[in-house]
Image (cartoon, rainbow, N blue to C red; front, top):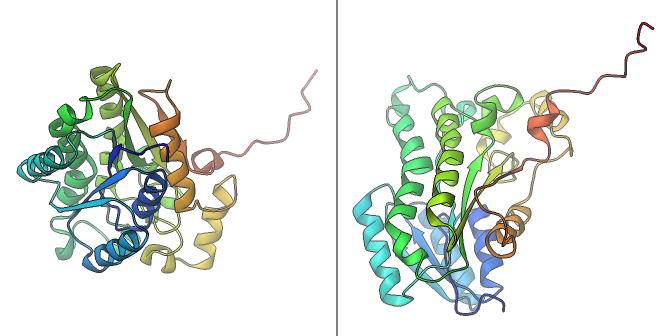
Length: 275
């Protein structure tokens, strides 16, 4: 129970990746602060699971795109634990082109703003307004979770998953990570985990993946050097490493994509030469 007496804030814990991260920290004794907003069925399922497991959880309903809601969350945490040791900035929203289509469609009228407000603004609001709680004690950490969409944009085999706004928003996370690392040092470390295609997040188990043809899926697997998508539990283990164990790493961006961003460029046979 390495994290007994520690507090970790994890938005998005009702969904598969956030849920796996929350389980990892709870298994080490941490108190979980879990902001929730939408996905009511997932929230109910999460609460039942975590209560049955005996986890120490604090659930707070808040739309993290708004500063007043984040300020209220900060007061809620201050009243109950007095500090935050770890912020796992696992909040984003992206419309998959293969599912949602063009921004020009009527049902996507607010999609661009939603992608930026969740992927960038909400992360900034959490760090900015909760900074006093994060720095009450030393040795804590922030992990910003982003996507390789910020690297690839809407191109290549994964273009069906990454819309323009979502890609641009994720590109911004490295800048925030590096700025915050400078600002928070030495009391607080700040790092970024750049995710590739993960089951339940741009991989198997999503509507977007289910809509792909066999040929489309084969092209994706062929681009991933490791030949498969990632698992939520693998993400959770890596987040835990960055937050708890990587005590001499700050301001870094770790790419966890199974080699997807490298797999688009093959290594050709060595030329015979002309000498």
